[in-house]
Picture (cartoon, each protein chain N blue to C red):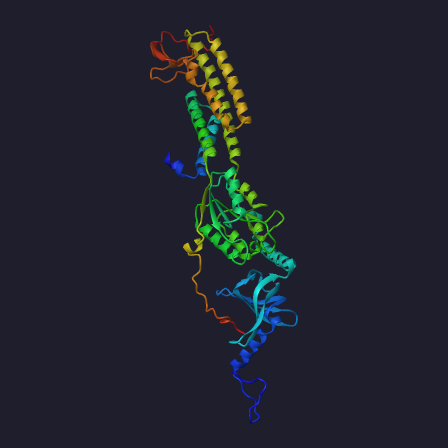
Length: 92
Length: 415
């Protein structure tokens, strides 16, 4: 699944883990045929394996926002500086 | 003017008239020639503080009797301590601003007058922001359980970011860290932290943010007591964990944040769970599935045997396989218990034991699956009528046969 490799590890884990929870919930509810139970069991084992793979093989990704991020995002106000002259706008 | 200042009279007996500039220049030179005024430390209270966009600081220093007009250019240090009413110690020189005729104190460095003054300013602001509701507990947001993107607002160099990355590498390598670099002390720090939060709010997929700084003096940590920083944290789109200084330091930022961590490392532990714990939850679910599937197989087995008995089919001695299945179930249960106690490494072992319980393996031990004419598994003798096709699946193949007689009504017909 190319989609899951692109997703952040935390998201992949979260979705596999909640599917695993769902499998347990269905098995706990019961009333399943042997066929259905066997399929859930197999799916649950696959999901557990996937979860463990994500947990053991993920690496922390580090992104650094550029130091001039504020300028890039137009967060720095335009330099409408008044004249450098001291006290140019001061009233006595 | 190159005049002779002493001979203040001309021939007619009238005083010489000097130009304004000449007098101003003379005063300026006189002031600047005094070594004491050229290297002067003054203590006083700040009033009339202004900080226009030029970046320079304009204020007056005063005490009960007198006022000293003061300026600190933006290159000066300690501008963050300038606020009306605060007591400061300044260093600088006295000179003359001739264009305005003002005697001025040109400050190059400002320090708070002792920790007492800072402490007082801190307490005042804390009370004000508290009254405004910025610290209310019911506006604190819960942290996400499994954050995918964690923003870290701190200095890009130094131990703090390294500590945070080390902890997350070890405990939770599932996330992406977005480092938003800022100064964390000095005059630039507060506006940069505010900008960092603005940048954070412009990103739409961040789950949680950490704002952190290592230990230091109250002056060093002061940026995190500034009102603009408090308001930036308050306005954050995502929950914020603050980790400023050591455990004993509590800044305004800590009060506003959704969660306070005693140290930057602790923030990294609070922000996400440990993968070892997550692995434990997975293992717990595997054990639970193990237990549930064992029960289902056991139930199916007894139904299957009842059907076999009812149909009076010739089957091999069922005592032995039955015992084997019981053994397997016991073993699976023990394996499950071991799983819960041990780590996720045991997963494969359990998978293997569980596979041994699969329907294919049961077939290998003498059981068969009885199928209806459409190929689906039969669960009751009443599904058959005399003359119906009946399929029997063995582990290694199947037999097709025809039903001679059905005795489905005899509920308790034990041969």
